[in-house]
Length: 325
Image (cartoon, rainbow, N blue to C red):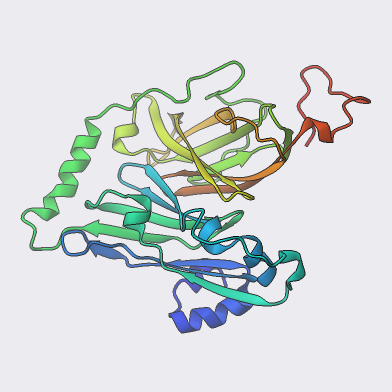
């Protein structure tokens, strides 16, 4: 069963089903929360994996919750627990079995964890853990019927968004990166609404690591321009070892797709995914995802290794040649 199919099961049936569906992550939550009656938005995350995998990447420290405000196309990210919440396990994961399945459960409170604005709106939540993703939960935040003119508020907000103008692309174009135009190495467009990503699986620490993407997305009213749109798109980089989530917030340029009935825009981007970070001293592994609106792309697993690990005294790279994959 898929994670989406598992999400429809009752808790007791879900736990039983997860024993045979491992590895899997399932996120469950309410379809509607009244913001003038409730103060919390509590979700339930189930994870089923081998004892070895659970010990290597504890759920609380390695899983992140991603919330997307679908009306404003804003992305919120938070780790389930702070780094110091759980001490490292003294057990070597390699000594544990891959055959023993462990089912874990967490109850993240999305409002506090992500610091989401407590106002009417449409939200989409998903949990990520390294290269795994959970099922999706869509939640409507709304006023109760006791609120005067609550029904009219959504229409007024949409009209105000339509009067706004998007800001310029970000990060600004560079030479050769960042780039907001299609390139020979740009991945193909997704068949429907979505994002495609491409990246070499490995690079030398300190060298550019080009993450390339193509997208077909439906802009929100405040993102549209005369010829297309400038859309918010977030790159989520999860350090697989240190369990540290990092968010790169982009504004990418899209052109209106001819004949698209939903007003979809297409475009491309490329950037050095680690340009804003000082290279670490040791090799690391990062898992990259991209999110915009209802679209989520990934995972891209990328290794960075020190140059000293390569036979630099006896071999080198050609001028202009990219580091080997």
